[in-house]
Length: 286
Image (cartoon, rainbow, N blue to C red; front, side, top):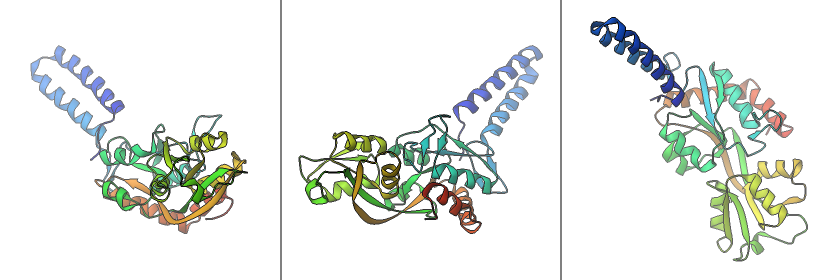
């Protein structure tokens, strides 16, 4: 179920080439044996199943994660170090620790590519991305037990007279993050408006701030955090009680990993790890 990464393939190819060079000097009888040994080495590099744990990881001993890293406070890039940080980043670290693994974060990618990446396998083990558990996503991947409750929100620039009713107009442009439940809500509930999908919530917030867009629909915990820390001239005009819950996306081909993640999430709840992370990023337990 694990696939060879590009780096592992190159490492295996280098070892294979070196082995062939030795067999060329040693004669034909050892050539087959050496080639077989090289093949076994490549296989060993790609076989990362933990027999005791009963699951597979892309890289042995590591929990490889993907996300869109521009969704603060859940995930973002530290301006000084360039490293990922945020609520989900700390959750991933605690998950890995509880599972006896090291966490490994891949570069940011667009949110609407996360589920396909996990479904296809071979690149990452999980997507931890402030991702709402939906039936549609569960058709493609497995979703962990929920670890955050969320709702949607409508955000406008302070001082304007916009409402949910006035925004439902052909002349109004509503920014959303592409592939999110916020986009789905806006399309369903503001059908007259022009819905503008963007790569990140930050783009959406900035566009509302500059007057490029009339409003943004996004997850309530994100909008509250952004308004408090960065976009103080914006405001939430409506909290939309969608009753969403975030989960972690895992390949359907890796049920043992899903079980291990759910066990780790339960342990984090019982030992106070999750509450501590919530307090760090939201000021109190959620």
